[in-house]
Structure formats: structure tokens, C-alpha cells
Amino acid sequence: METLARGAVVQLDRAGARGTDAERPPVPVPERRRPPRPQTRSERHLSGSEREEISRGIAAGESARQLAKRLGRSPSTVSREIARNGGRDRYRAAPADAAAYARGRRPKQAKLAQRPALRTLVEAKLVLCWSPEQIAGWLRRQFPGDASMQISHEAIYLSLYDPRRRQAIDRSLTQRLRSGRPMRRPKLARQPTGRGIIRGMVSITARPAEVEDRKVPGHWEGDLVMGTGLRQSRRSSSAPAATRPSSRCRTASRPSRSPRTSPGVSSASRPGYDGRSPGTGAGR
Image (cartoon, rainbow, N blue to C red; front, side):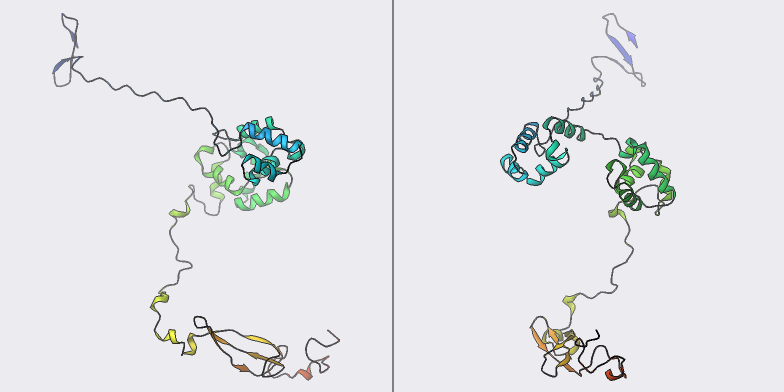
């Protein structure tokens, strides 16, 4: 780089060519990152004024369905809002609105990182090769009324595999899972195992033409019907074979036999048999 009499700066590139600053293309200035946008609320969420109306309606004795109709919301939305903020006796609009704002903040710290006692229990069960489903069910039975000591199995999986939750749990415990894989594989990426697939399956559209007239007994649908009052005898059974498309039914009678009597054994040889029909004996 050398200076001319006019004060212009001349630069020498690697090939030895000379050029002034005016001839050089401007160096692109990296764009500055925009500051994070302030937290905003979606129109689908309840606003502070709507919570004030809910609080006034509770004081006036209105039901959740009446409040929802007046606010233009779903009754389940109003019911959940009241239930998660102390119920009808302790609901207050300002604390409920502040709690909703805190729940909506992101990023949110994992529950295992917030609860050291819960994390200790989960890690101890993972060391024993318990599955996250077993741990979640065991915690619900051990602490039925304490939500702070309960966690879902999906939250345990996320704490083990999600890189954004590395501080929540010891990630080396993935070796104690039954899969033993260090990375979670989504369901769509799993290779088919062939279970539940019929090999060489013939489609129903390729069935022979003889099925349509239902002349061959093998193409009928049969079932066994047993009861009293049929035409053959007082107690008999029939095996109807019905063709579903044509709604035809054919019956074939079978010899009457008590369901309690096995072949080769008569009813009179059973101990305690008094000759009456089944179901009417006094000794039953």
C-alpha cells in the first residue's frame, strides 16, 4: 500500500495490480442481530380483561358455561382456567394473569433441573434399569397428591436425549435404557421389521368369480347359534351359514346335546342329577 500526492490510497493485490479505494468494491458489513422481540400473547389465549370478567362472574355466582358464552370462549377453556388457579373460591384475576405470563416464557427450564429431589429419584430408578414409563407410574403411586414429585415419561426421555436439557439429568444413563442407544430415533426413521405383514397376501379384488354366486360352501360365513324354542326340539343347536352380500341364510340342525354332557357320558350318571333340565335344579 502506497500513498500518492493527492492523498489517495493505492493498494497492491497479490497479482501486483494497483487500484484506489474508490475502485475497490465495498466490503459487506455483517448485519447486526435484531434484539429479541418482546413476549406477546396470541389471540387464542385469555387476556387480562377476560380474566377480570371471569373473576366478577364467579363472585356473581355464574357458572363456567355462562361465563364462556358471555366471553365467546369454549366452556372447557374457562373451566381449566378456574381449576388451574385455585378454583372458584381462590381465583383472582391478577395472580392468574401473572402465572399465565410466567408459564408462557421461553426457553423454559426442565422440571428435573428445577427439582433436585425428583431428579435423584429418577436417576436412581434409571440405574436399576427401570423404563421411563415405569418411573412415571411409580411416582404417581408414591406421591399421589404432590404434582412437584411427578413427571411424565416423555419429559424423562427429553431430558435424556434433548441437547437443550443437558443440565437436567445425567445423559450417560441412556445406556441403562432397554434400547441402549445414545440418540433417540424417531418413529418415521425406524426400519420395518416385517411383523404384522402377511406375506404373499392376495387382494380381495383378485378373488375368483365363483365367490359371487355363493354356491360353494367354503365361501359362506358360518356361526353357531344355541337356544330353546327352535323347531327341531326344545333344546337344539343350529349352524346358519349366511352370505353377507345377498343376506341369505341357510340352517343346518344338529342333534340335541346338553353343553354340560361330554361325549360318552350320560346325564343320569352325573352325581346330583335329578332328571330336570339344566338351570332348574334345586341344588344349583
